[in-house]
Image 1 (cartoon, rainbow over the protein chains, first blue to last red):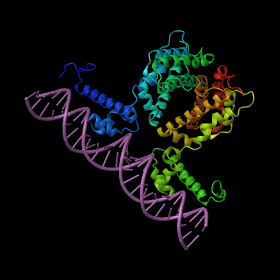
Image 2 (image 1 turned 90 degrees about the vertical axis):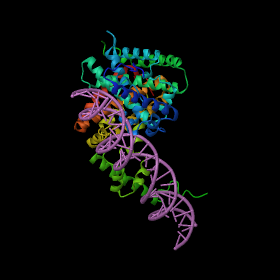
Image 3 (image 1 turned 180 degrees about the vertical axis):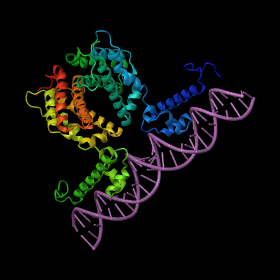
Image 4 (image 1 turned 120 degrees about the vertical axis):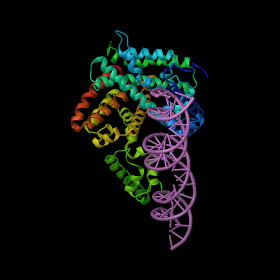
Length: 217
Length: 217
DNA sequence: GCACAAATTTACGACGGGCGTAAAATTAGC
DNA sequence: GCTAATTTTACGCCCGTCGTAAATTTGTGC
C-alpha cells in the first residue's frame, strides 16, 4: 500500500483518515447520483448501496440529505461578513462587497454561483435544495449584520445595521440567482461573468447614494 | 346545455358548504393543537383524531402540513405588488410601500406580522415553518418584481427591476421580522407599532436617495 | 504478538409526512 | 326511490430521520 496515502498528513490518523475517506466516498457517489437522476429522485438507500456502506452510515456522516448536495456551506455563509471584515482602509462596506463580487465573478468562484449546469439543474429541480439555499442566504445576511454591527460599533439588532445588511445581502443574492439562471440557460462562464459584472455595477450603484459612506474602515 | 346550475350556485352548495365546514373544522383543531403543543410536536394523525376525520382527509384538504398553520399565504405574497399597483398618482413605489407598511402597523395587520405571541412562538419554534415563511417572502419579492416591471415598462428580469424589488422587499421582510421579535419579547401591539413605524422611517429613508424617483405613477 | 478498550459501522425497528388506490359513505339529479 | 358523481375512508407503501444495541475495526498497553 502507499505509505503516504494521506491527503493531509495525519500523524495520529489511521482511523481519522479512513473516516475522511469514507465521507468523501459517500459524498462522491451522492454527487454523481444527484447530478444523474436529480436530488429528489435519489434515495439515501441508493447512495448507501453505491458507496457499499450501510444506510445508517450515510446519515451518520450527513445529518440531513441536503448536506450531501451542498458543499462549502460555512464558507458561503461567512463570505459577505469576511469581505467586510477584511475591507481595505478607507473602503466602505458597499465598496468591499462590490469588489468581492467582481473578483469572485472574474475567478468564476463556485461559492458565488459558478457551480456548473449540472449543479444549477439539480438545485432548480429540487424544492428541498431551493429552500436550503434560501436558508443559507439568510444565514449569510445575519453574519453580515454581525460584521457590520462590529464595524460601526452598533448593536446587531440596530435597524440601520440590519437594513444595510439586508440591502447588501439582497444584491449579492440577486446576482447569485442571476448567475444560476444564466448557467441554466447554457451560457459559458466567461460570458456570464461579463454580464453579471456589468449588472453588479448597476445594482451596487443603486445603493451608492445610500451606503457609500457607511462602515468605512 | 345545462342551466347554470353547478358552476356558481350559492344556495345549491350543500355539498360545497359542508366541504368548507370540514376544512374549517380541521383548520381550527390544527391551530389549537399547534399553539398548544407546537408545530413539530403535533402530528397529522392527532389533528385528524381531534377533528374526528381520517388522516387522509386532512392531507386531502391541506397538501402540506405547513398549510395547516399558515393562513392568508396568497394575500401575503401579493401584498407588496398590490401596494405598488394601487399607488397614488405621483407616488413612487418606495413611498407607496412605506405608506402601506405604516398603515398596516397602525392597523396591527396580521399579514404584516401582528399575529400574536402564540403564532410567533409557533413559527420561531419550527424550522419547517421558518423555511415556509422564507419561501413566502421570496414569492412576495418576485410578485413585487413583476409589478415593478409592469410599472416601469421593463422586463421582469431587468437588473434594475429585480434589484429594486429585492431592496424594497428586504425592508419589508426586516420589519416583519422585527415585529415578530418584539412580539416574542412580550411587547404590546401598540408599543410595537410605534417602534416599527419609527424604524420603518429610518429603513425606507435609507433607500430614499436611491429609489425616491423610481416607478412614480 | 496479543488482548483489551475505544470508536466506528452495521442491522433492526420505530415514527411521521406524503402519496396512491380502491372500497364505502354521502349527495345531487332524475 | 334510484342512479351517478363526489367525498371520505381504510390500507399500504416509500422515504427521511432518529434511537438502540450488536458486530466489526482500530488504537494501545503489556
